[in-house]
Length: 451
Image 1 (tube, rainbow, N blue to C red):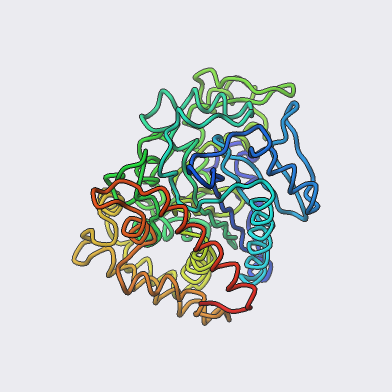
Image 2 (image 1 turned 90 degrees about the vertical axis):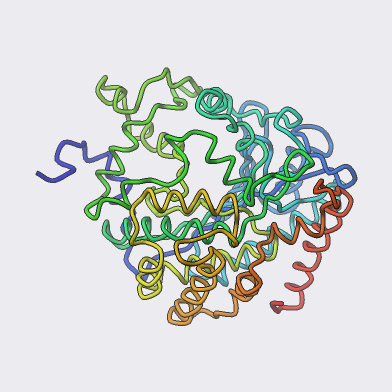
């Protein structure tokens, strides 16, 4: 019997509908960034003259973004297929329109940074690109007034110890890639998951928390691991089962509890039921299914594209190189196959153990008969060759190639340059460092070249 024989077709429709001819495949990117007070370094609140709502209002008033509200609150923007949304603690997230080339993505990214730079000058604020805010705790950061977050926060309070840290204080970069058919979708998924521990360590950028050392190399990924074990981390099925497909992923989603529901224009509690319970009761709709799929937070996620969620925000100048790394590794079939051969042929428990070591120890962690840093250098080389075969410039990867060669992640540099001798955060040095990186990147782009 086919694995999907007992599933309603509409449960598989989002995944089947994502199958895209090679000539039409695109690249999507989501980038999260945090606004702070430029003197004290604390996070901006939602309201007020210098709050995140004021940031959105400025962008709408000066740069053609269309406003989206929930109740009386301005909570999102849209323009030409792109959106700007807010994470639960007020992190600003750009989701680009799907683009055919990395060059187009770069234009979108740099344009948005320039707009944020203008807002920062107008409102006397600053932007930070660390993947965990290095100073504040969840208690110090207010909630964005969105009903979804009210119910998600309640759910995650009972599933792990750091869910509110994740919601309020983290920032990442996500990459969306198209697939041609079911087989390629799962191949992209399992290969991305196999290399996730190494690439995650290469761009780790969260060395501080609550003003002190984080205690692990990648605190953002540590936070995710302690958020909800059923919804986060790596997924065993695609790695362990060669015949894994859309139906198997759908069954995984069916077994998970609902975090929230949307009915009659209002948010509500999931009621402790799984989606399978909702389906059996005859209450489930396609809209419910689409919403439920957004509450799964594994490092790689399947929608009508493959979404790679593993990576910290690596710093303002390494966002595009990171996207290029994933494109070179996964869109080029030779690079993808070689990446799988490098890291894939182990059982899931071994892969999961590597992931935990990489989160704790970074590029210096032991990876089978190598270090994670050794494997990072090999993956960058594979991606470079893949980009060349795809017709893109391997020089896009130069910053990450340099990091891999030096066995130094962005967070390693932040730790060295922004920490006191005792390991605590030097707030003034951190803010100056972030400002320097931001200015250097925008100046580099104005000159039309890459460093």
